[in-house]
Image (cartoon, rainbow, N blue to C red):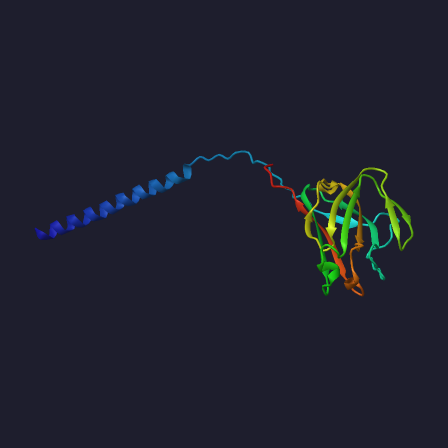
Length: 207
């Protein structure tokens, strides 16, 4: 009697496993019947702009860099340059940086009696006259002073230059002068200046 009972239990276990296996197989078949759909692709193209600010000399202008000697109080040296926005992006600002390079001297450390820098803009191209060693410039349009102060000015933001706009050009002349107030302590001194313009991109915006 005990032998028959064991055989019956064995068949029940096997039968249960077979049913569980069949259910799993049916569930597996159901995963292959899922429907899907996708939207039409949204085409998106992003092209970055270019920031390109350049400093060039007008045609026929007297050469730069400038080297001059025997400067005395009241003397000045003047040259013309064009500052242009050759990029595709508007600028938020244009900064003038004028610094002394090399060994410091009273010419650049004395902000009152030392070398002074003047930067002027003309609404049209400047007319050049004078000689190669001492050019003079006149403006037949409207003149505006972009900067006037110590030659070693550091960083100065220019007020509403034309070069903020792509394709815009600032017709500039810069002059470096030694004031008449410079005394004997300024004799036999030398100084080197580096003048740079830096354009900064416009503020970021939603597109």
